[in-house]
Image (cartoon, rainbow, N blue to C red; front, side, top):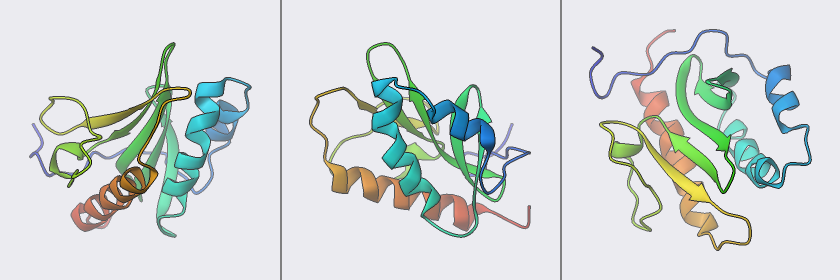
Length: 134
């Protein structure tokens, strides 16, 4: 079993994945509220790659996954593969797993955008620092 701080590696991640574009090519309002947040993930660095993993767009540093977006019936989520280790002074993160945490977004719901942006940046930084040459 990998160490708690080991990167979660996904093969097949590319700079721009057509399958990710197709996932967002819908009128689903929950997917649309996730689009700018996935763009924020893409903008973290030149080394950001993307892939569909478990039917969700996933952002990686090289092959090391750092965040994903998902749309469900009643809410959307932004998940972090190393969420348990991220600073979260605004208390946005939910979950009790050993490593992963997520932020729920609802239509019309309030959101601390600065805090979520900081979580994305921190998730990217953790993945970048934990990555080796893969």
